[in-house]
Image (tube, rainbow, N blue to C red; front, top):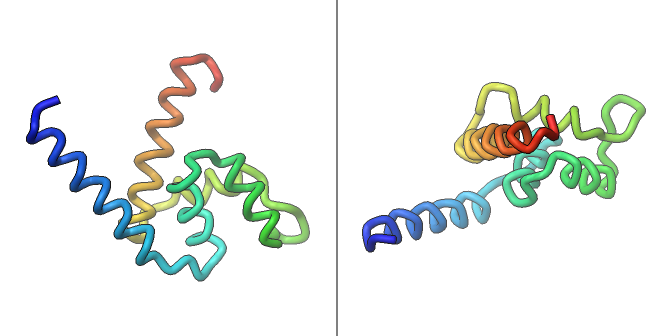
Length: 99
């Protein structure tokens, strides 16, 4: 890795940390995005949201609910980051034959 590539990576990670620390996850959608950026798994996010008592109508949250939120038009920088991670993860899953 070249020194400039390392500096770029450090800037990306510092930006990530700053966005996580300053994010206000005050709605169900924002909480979903916030957790997805950290966990990078819609299933794990659904489990965490259910632990926190979130519901969709009268039922528990499922991974499709989280996926649908992430796929919507990005409303902020963290949502854009979640969408990018989601698309990258989806691409890897397709290559492995999981999707």
